[in-house]
Structures are given as C-alpha cells and as structure tokens.
Image (spheres, rainbow, N blue to C red):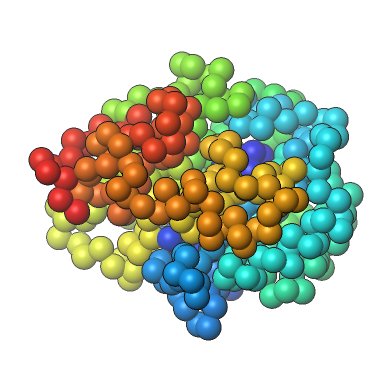
Length: 418
C-alpha cells in the first residue's frame, strides 16, 4: 500500500478502538467503518475490516489483557521499505533498492508467533511495497495459520493475475489501493510514476477475478479537494468495498509538500462535508488520521438529534480517533515498534525485546494511554477520550507527540470537563 504503511491501511477491527489500510468476515451496518461492506486502518489497508475478539472472548474498545493492558486490535507491519514508486506523501521516503536490517524470514515468523499474546490483531502487511519481499506469501500463510486476519496494502502496480491468486491462497482477505486523483494525469503526478493509475485499475480487475475484496484510500491534499466526488464515484464504479480518506501527516516526503497541506479550517470543512456525504451512500466510508472527525460526528449528531450508536454510525460510534499505542501499532522493516507509521518514535526493538513486552510496558505507549500526559488544549478537551488528537502531527509540527493537535480549530469548553 503505499500509505507508506499504516497510513492507509485497509483494516479495521470489530469493536476496534482504532479504526487504518484494511476487512473482516462478519456483517456490519452500512457505512460501518470497519469491515466488509456487507455488514474499517485498516486500514490505515487504514482499515481493513473488523477485528476478532480479544483473549477469552473479550471484545470492544475497553477489552484488556490479563494485566490490564489494552488488547492490540491492529498491527501495521512494514515488512519491507523497498518500493517501486516515489509518492509525494511517503513517510518512509522509500526507494527501489533493498534496505539493510530487514527482518529475516525466521525473525519475521518468530515475531508473528508473538502476535496472539496481545489479543487477536488484524495484521496489515504493508511497506514500502510488500510484494517486493520475496517471502511475503510465506509470512502471510504463517500468520494465517495462527488464526490472524491478514490484509495487505500494495500499490497495485505489481499485481498480476498470478499474484492475486497467490494472495488469496496465502490468506489475504482484503487489499487497499490508493487513488489520489480521478484520472491518470492527477494520480500519476502524485505517485511519481507514470502508469501507476492504470496499474491500480489492472489490480482491481485481478482482485475481482479471484474474489478478493478491496478498498480505495485517498490522501487529502489541497490539490485534490475539488476532485473528491469524482474519486468516490470511481471507487463506487469499480466496486470497492470501502472508501477511506487520509488526512496528510507532514513527515517524510510529505514534509516537502508545503502548500498541499490544508489548514485547520479546511480540515474542519472536509470532515463536516464527509459527515454529510456518508448519508448519501451505502458504501463503507472512513476518515483516517483524522481523530477530530470523532468530535465532529458527535457535535453534528447532537444537532441532528441522532443517537451516537453502533447501529447509526458503526465503529465510529464506539472507537477512538487516534489509536496509536492504544489499540494499534506499527512495526518497521527493522523491527522498531512505533505508535503509527507517521510517528517515528522508538517504543522498542523486537530484535531486543519481545513484542508483547513492548506493547504492555513501553513508556511512550503508557503515556498515550493516559490522558493526563497530554498538553495544550488536547489535555483539557471534553472530547479527548473519543478524539485524542493526531500524535504524529503534534510531533512533526509542534515537536512533542503529547502536544495539542496542530490542525484542530475546536476550543474546549472552559474547564475541559470530560
């Protein structure tokens, strides 16, 4: 996928407090941000589907492990950083050549063996371009053998009929594909390689031929705001199970986009438009890397007199905006555990510390789970528990991952009552 990792993942979990890209067998209401269309990151594949239950049948956003740590719902795993594209928004600044330090096949399988110890997470195989890893289908099959839901985020250009067949045989249940413009000219310019738009369309046909579900992910920039309806109509026309929009995080190559990063006011307008637009379609829609959408949803629902329930809003009603370190994490190609792919915060190295120990005891993860550690208006906001602010934008734009969300225009009520 080229969200460059969890950025746009096709995955989601049932009761998943996290939402990124990525889909899970099981039905949900229409517009459900989490699993299959019949029934979210995910996703980030932002959101692929709907996750399973936690240990001993625990489920829902408050499910915990035996020591009180939250269940891990979703893992975006950058199995390689190598990529054949050069996308303008790439957090990884990926290139074609192999990167040093990537986990070996044996190390990768050993890591997979530890995933069930933190719950029943959906695994997003991402990159870079995951299909550039020679043992990718061996790793997917191994994860599948552990009972884990597997989704993938390829960029589409390397997908052939044979690759699509191997994906299904190995156990991939949904893929996310990125479309950032309604036509080849706009999409290819953003992706940095001519022919990438056609590559996505070809991949879609291959997925359809083997019955592999897919979702479309779109990064929000000033340049494509006016084309959103056209992009959605394309997603609808080709038969996507879901459309997920991703609010740009200015890191990696995206830090150079400058004028393409929309303002706080524009974010507010986009998310209000998204709230209204979701009423016009039965397709599953989700806003990712947009924690303040959870605030806007509740404000607008109150105005509309609509109860914020799972029946009315799917996972958006029962999940939290930013799930980094709370229900979701990212693992880099070298084994560094991070809250998300956009927030390059070293929370532990799986080559040195078992992943379950990192998930349960990382100082940074413990901070992210404690609202008292947040500063600025996020620390006093009445919507903190359902929003949380984007920790990656706080880090890249304010220099502190616990600082207030830089692109939120909301003024908390005096006293910040929860």
